[in-house]
Amino acid sequence: MNSLAPGLTTSHTTTANLPVLDYTIITTDAGLATACAHWQQSPALALDTEFMRVSTFYPELGLLQIADAAAVTLVDPLGIRDWGPFRALMLDERIVKVLHSCSEDLLVFFTFLGILPTPVFDTQIAGALLNQGNSLSYQNLVKTRFGVDLPKGETRSDWLQRPLTPEQLDYAALDVAYLYRCWQDQQSALQQQGRHTWLQEECNRMLGNYESEFTHDYDDYYLNFKSGWQLRPRPLLALQKLAVWREERARKRNKPRSWILKDNALFAIANSMVSSRTQLATLEDVSDNFVRHEGDSVLALVQQAREATEADCPPPLPQPLTNSEKQLLRRMQDLVEQRAIELGLPQEILGRKRALTPLLYAVLALQPGEMLDETELPDELIGWRREAILHPLLKLLRP
Image (tube, rainbow, N blue to C red; front, side):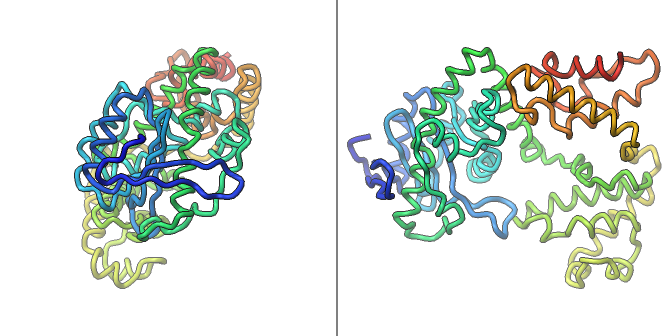
């Protein structure tokens, strides 16, 4: 944008050995509304965020970067009160939202807008589907495509301080300066290879990971405890209830989960089915302050689990694989590696161990002649992977 509206100022990067980059800085509602009207004409917007998340559950937005085909814009969120025009822009299905490795950025958008941008194009995922490398960094993507070494020095600087330094602003602007052109290149390459729908599936799956932020359903969070298989039915129910309680508490207080209660302490409470404050206080990493302020709530949840019938308890979790089952998993991983080479994909994006293991458990649990219910499998094995790897794996497991 060449003409300035209220709340818009221009600057440019001064970083050594890099091209001069002009960018606009928005600090007011009026400036943001003007920019949003301009961006509505763009087929895509490259986005990035700078945030702080040291002692909070939710990230605190420090700066928002946007680029279209012609210009880079930085939005200072600390001066913005009316996010309505930008929120509508993020929900506009006509405009592709381009981000790189966007899982944390999505939580930032949920935190300050209460929505997730859609549709999303993640250039890191696109890079993997184009066999440009798994978990490809933005710096390496730009280096490979444009021969430019982007600075990394401001990555962990304080993005909530004001004023932001020229070095911070330059760094932030460069973080989206090449992103739009990366999207153009990757989108074209994906379409040529017939993999553009694969990319959209992957990005939609990532958006789905944040469904619990909207539904407040945290009932499956206990599954993150790898030792849960050791628990009997009622302690497992206690673990589930305590995990839900901690998720709700962490969000309400806006504190990291470990600040509420560490994993090992939460598991120990469930495993021992504590019945008193005295017993609770003897557990490792359970402070007197926790017992005083949270003890009654925790004991009440354990008591609910104690009084439940086994029918009310979650099903037991699978035990660790036996040696013979581990060998079978290894054969599955070898097949994934072979198919990845054939398809020109990184092995990690085709079939991660975290998806292969549940498939193995599901097949081992089948009775003779029983068919596998694919709807109960991890999402990572459905969609484009059904033909690419799921069916070959099933032939291996059930010849």
